[in-house]
Length: 316
Image (cartoon, rainbow, N blue to C red; front, side, top):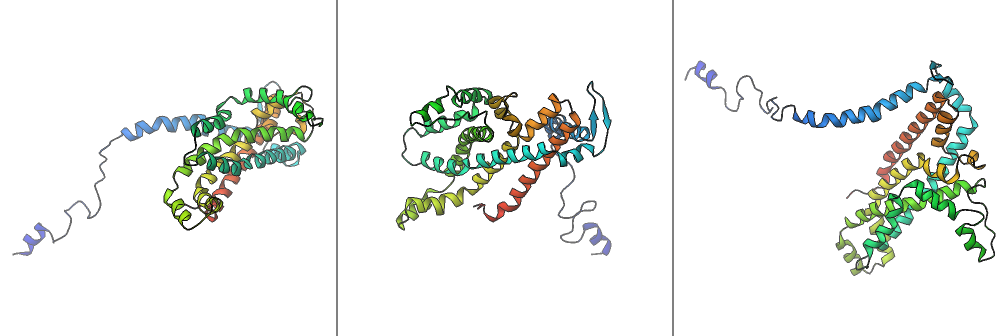
């Protein structure tokens, strides 16, 4: 056989000319349709999320007049942000509210374990009852709890009076007003946490509990050494969501306390301060700087949680 014949036939195991071995062709059998279907989602995200963030970031470097119109002032709003005592107070209030709401996570873990016990009757009814406050309108819930917290004829003070305790004005006293709002947020968040944690509990193999029972482990030890470690991915998820929701505190505070409440000045959150500066004081540039601060803080807290979740979250 001549060398020309061998060259034409190609060496054994060698890919045909014009195409490299082991690499598929560049032709796309789906065509442009994947891009067509995904494009509306990207447009929605760009128009309703990315553009407002960019616009707010630009507004944070401007100063607005009473009758509209903006002037670029550089870092003036951020300099004011660093020295404004209202920002420090609002940040502290937001952190206090978030910590109180996070206290509902271990409560939700215990309640979810109780509701998901094998053989428990009306378990779906219990889950529905706990979840109802989360799906109800925050304004409606706040109006109901505003009557409960009322210092003159509220249900809570009436209950305390049965034991000879004179209840305070819960939503108009400095210190108590913020705690009252935080306890309401805690009550609302428990239902959502329970639903997520219940789904996580259903993913734990029953065989682990059976083996632990054979070895003589008590229910509390099974809960501590099986349920909690295997439930950490769901716990991590609800912690991230609760912290993000905590930094967005506005509607409960606004409707429960009201703008004319004397305790509002010392109970306002960062988002309420943004609302007050932007729409009441008409200082949209400074309000935009506060909004960017909230965005940065949420990003930092979320990044820190994802960074340290490797040390305590168990992914099976």
